[in-house]
Image: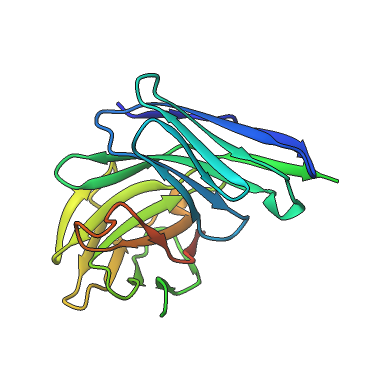
Length: 111
Length: 115
């Protein structure tokens, strides 16, 4: 079966740093995504990791450990507009690529 | 360059009815995937279309069917609607294999309400 776990909700303070964790157990692995989704909107792509290590992109960084089935998304210098759901998703390559999503972490930023 | 577009934006149907949702992929993309997202949940993979054929399918009943046209646009059909089919339906397109094919770009979604 496929299982992706991430916390349901998190709260952080404007200007601070927050780390959102994701663990996965999937049959097949061809990379891990993080998406941001504001309420009522479509998910937007944040990052893609296929090799172990840290990928940094501005205020956002994503880390992957394939051996541990673990990833995290690190958000720095939090802004109020970062209040959103953050979706961890694993791409599974069988006969065709297929993405399995976690349930998402709802992040609330307080002033 | 238009991104992924979906129509309609919102739809209200009655139990037992049938619905067709439409998706036009991003320019240059040839693969279309459909997802169902219930409130407070992550998107659930329904199926993926490539070269006008269903290439991969998630755990959805046969009431959910689709089609891809020669211009790569796609339709999602749901028959015998149930209250539980109420959700946001997302379409995502991706480029041809070998060109960042892992990237999926999502459309704005169609909000389906079944009463």
